[in-house]
Amino acid sequence: EVILCTPPNKEGNINPAILFAAKTAGVDKIFKAGGVQAIGAMAYGTETIPKVYKIFGPGNQYVTAAKQIVSLKDAAIDMPAGPSEVQVIADDSADPAFIASDLLSQAEHGADSQVILTTTSEHLIASVMEEIEKQLSKLPRRDMAEKALQNSKAILLKNNEEIIELTNEYAPEHLIIETENYNELAEKVINAGSVFLGHYTPESAGDYASGTNHTLPTNGYAKAYSGVNLDSFIRKITFQEISKEGISNLGKTIEVMAENELLYAHKNAVSLRIKQD
Image (tube, rainbow, N blue to C red; front, side, top):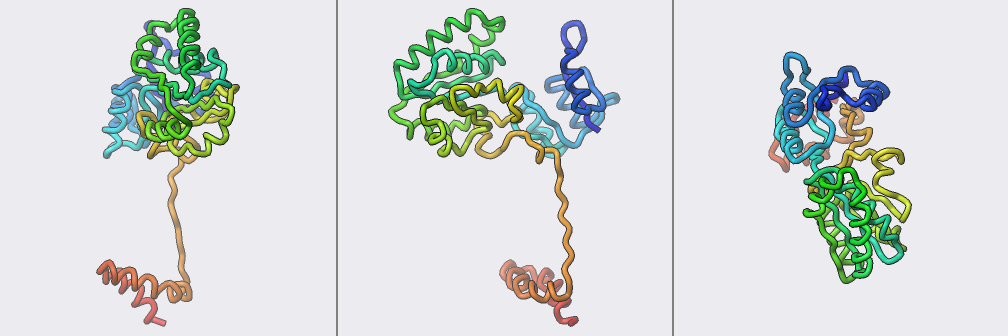
């Protein structure tokens, strides 16, 4: 059974688009709940909301903390997925308007979002800042985006090596590489949730249409976690059967390993079977 917890609006209703998406995805039950209280309800169960085996979905820092707490013994989680992040690597081949729109698309998520521009071009930083001001003034969520920008940075670095070093240390949720040599830089990225390459690959494409999942690790957790994928919904059980000939062939290896770990019952479980022959 698959359940969905989603917060209602001020009138107590759920957005019809969410209901349609849930039906299309095969959700069995929908509950009007969100935030930490929804995490607790799904982890422990209530009179109306059943306890679940695994919880998926991003949230703010409180939701992320709640997921991590319940994952200790009560329910599995997809990953720590908190406030949204984007890092843009760009050079003078990039369009400042594109970069500004990419940064603002994450900033408008919430006041606790963070956006970072990394480049070797001081001129590009100035141009992007001008574009941000132009585009910001037209956004319905301007106040939210402005607060997020207070947590954000435009970082001027000496060369691409420094940019890649910073990137792999920061491990951004979303990484956009808008440079002339984007494939060359992408090969050096080892820590990121999802990477968007070239001048025509905005992060919002990954959110809505290009096929990648945008529930991704944040706050540096891309160093240890992958984004949600089909494997996230699967548990694996292994089965094995060994013949008499097989245990004879493996026996010596098992005995030596067991002896070195001083686990003689392990060794005997093999030795007795070999001697039986």
